[in-house]
Length: 422
Ligand code: NIG
Ligand code: FE
Picture 1 (tube, rainbow, N blue to C red):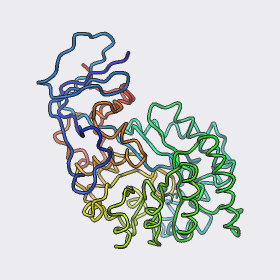
Picture 2 (picture 1 turned 90 degrees about the vertical axis):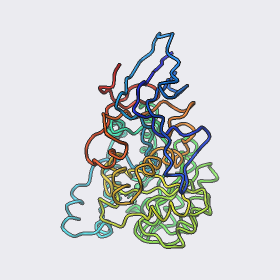
Picture 3 (picture 1 turned 60 degrees about the horizontal axis):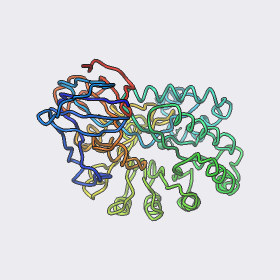
């Protein structure tokens, strides 16, 4: 049996009670901490925890690994519920075009953007795709990410969408972090279906979706519901078909325009609606009081210089806001959740406590993992970040751009070894 003891933690952060699956509205500012804490994990699960004064001591040191976290915070590892981490190549040439004045939509119209990524991915072998994505996820684990959602959507054909999802499955099996997968075939209309929208949707709904379901390759289904991409009616068709295969929706909506996608996604019981940079009052009203999680992606707003999502209004209206990196080559070439945390505070005006809850508990909820991850709670997976010695929790988002992480533990085992040893 593998056992891990963390002792003398400056605080065990996010020590929420069991049974809480998300933090909505005003409760997002509630981040319980056990000061001067200890925690015991067995076989990758938290089995007990408390303040040092209640530490029962250890009589059986057999196979026990001990970490001394004096002056260091222990946090639940980051959950990243929206990424496109499998892709063939970065797109820094488009970045330079944008610096010279082109817009995201103009680049897309020239065959760049998602279609550029699709062309490259179609020409890449499954093994090469796997190796490059693995390296990306390893870097993300090093930065504290312990669970990640990965979308398809750069294949845009039966063969290449399946290739992406098979790569995701291999990543799930070979890496220690939790991986959830999403079918995003309705990401853009591929070149060969330019004049045949109905033909592409038919392929997605009647060939790809059944094949993905047969192989058990996707947990969720996604659509880029946006002007010039897919309409609300098309999104509803895809969500209904996904629902019949037991895949809940996690959809891209309101990135550039507000066309009614949020109300429709909520009506279909979507697990999350993601982006939300351009919001009307009716969009917020549709979300308020629903179980659908707004997942905000501030690194995408930063990179594309588009508006930031109205996080404060969503929290004021009682929503359980989650954060994600949107890691992808076109609109957010980072998978660093520490940077996302800083942007959430600086640009979305979330409090450090709210942002930490949004990147842990609510992010876990946005991929159906909050019974497993997202807080330091008995029974959950022992997946943590141990910080370097830092003066306060607010220092984490405040001192942006620096690496404040010492150790990353996934399921009780170090994924990044640091100085916090006994
Ligand atoms: O989440 N908005 C749609 N999809 C991605 C961008 C994809 C790309 O540009 O490659 C996003 O921003
Ligand atoms: Fe995205």
